[in-house]
Image 1 (cartoon, rainbow, N blue to C red):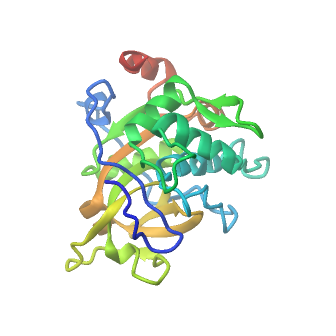
Image 2: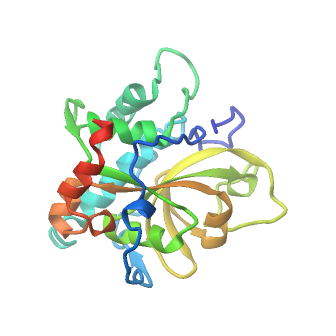
Image 3: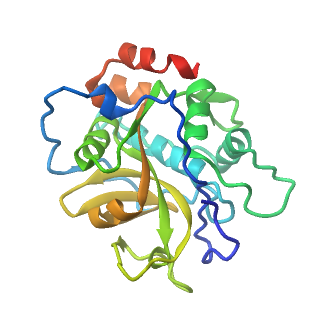
Length: 268
């Protein structure tokens, strides 16, 4: 669902309706028949990270599907090698814009927020080509694999965050997240009377506990309660990032990179 022109202030949206690509591996199929241990009660990969992570142009463009990618890079780099040795890497906004152009078809010569983006299209681009990184955006950061996760299976969502450092998600945004004339509230909770969906949004979840998940959006941190998650989130992805895997030894579903590579063959 694309952002509307009336989006409140500097908090833009931009996620388009989700798609269903049968070539994308699904966690429920990969884990079928396995006896799984419960996920940890809580995980927080944002602990100690800077208070402001940067808008990633999501204050002027509907590039949330790309902004979330570069927030993911921040989380992965900050947690790489243990926090004492880690240094968070923040790529320049020009790289975010370039990914928006290449993966979502944004034309900077056309005024406005751009076309928005599809999460599976962005992830496929990251797998096949890689996100622009570096001062001039000439290098590429490729992901090793991505796996779709059923948002109805909260334990699998928690495992995804624990295993991958984060979950890349998409959801339909109710008006309560963007109240007119005010910034988003710190806690996003389900309001039964709020049926006014104002657009779609892509974010990363980089932690959780019994109350909800830790959201990174618009360069800030929010809490999404599990009730909100159940009512508005309709796509979740586990991403295998090679640097994260090398540093932590953790992979989506506990599968080796070789096993995941086999699952990704159809998307090559």
